[in-house]
Image 1 (tube, rainbow, N blue to C red):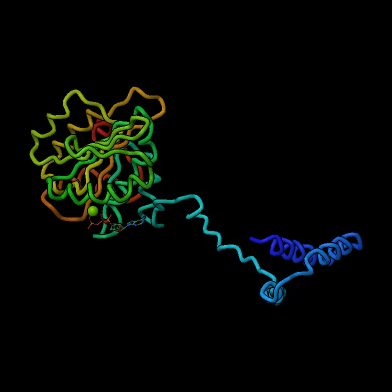
Image 2 (spheres, rainbow, N blue to C red; image 1 turned 180 degrees about the vertical axis):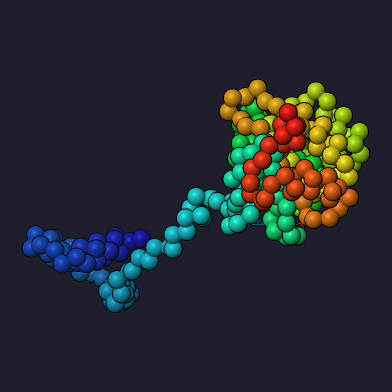
Length: 253
Ligand SMILES: Nc1ncnc2c1ncn2[C@@H]1O[C@H](COP(=O)(O)OP(=O)(O)OP(=O)(O)O)[C@@H](O)[C@H]1O
Ligand SMILES: [Mg+2]
């Protein structure tokens, strides 16, 4: 930028606000100095002076974007499911209602706790794949730095919390969890298990040494399936929907 251009710009900025006398005198001085302005720079002045004053329009404020909300429960059953504090909960309902997605989102609340140890199971490997794919979309957004290990079929958070995603095909598969402890266990599509064996066994694996973590067992299901009858007996028959009740073991004491 030439010296003249600089002077011209100074002149411009000095003349924009209608200032005090003092200021206008300095403008004059600048004008004198800049008397050798070229026609080009003059036209620049005109075009700038013709420009309408800038209007600042702030971008619409989206609270969810601002807070980086990655999951928000749908109103109704999904919210009720995620708000429930009972030890064991079944979320039943029509296909596509958000049962599996809510079950994926549920552990995110405490997954970053170093003591968190969770297990999410499906009946077969193919069904599990779908769930893993959804978790791969959701989890890194919710917990930056979280790592998926294909070999271990396990998520590990930067602070050390762990969530295994696994399948339980045969009843004997539960034995691979012998001696392990989980504070969160979820069965997606519970009626695909034809007997309560896996659920009952995994109940014995629900424990934690951490005072910060609660114990939860969660299940989702559609009506029907080979386990319809035992699931109905365990969760549906004892009480109306959304009503807490004591489990079989305690009711018969
Ligand atoms: N709260 C939510 N926020 C954003 N997307 C959601 C939410 N809940 C559900 N979804 C979307 O809806 C899709 C269907 O939900 P989901 O698979 O959980 O239904 P489902 O009840 O498990 O169905 P099915 O009975 O067929 O297994 C999810 O893959 C997800 O993309
Ligand atoms: Mg589902």
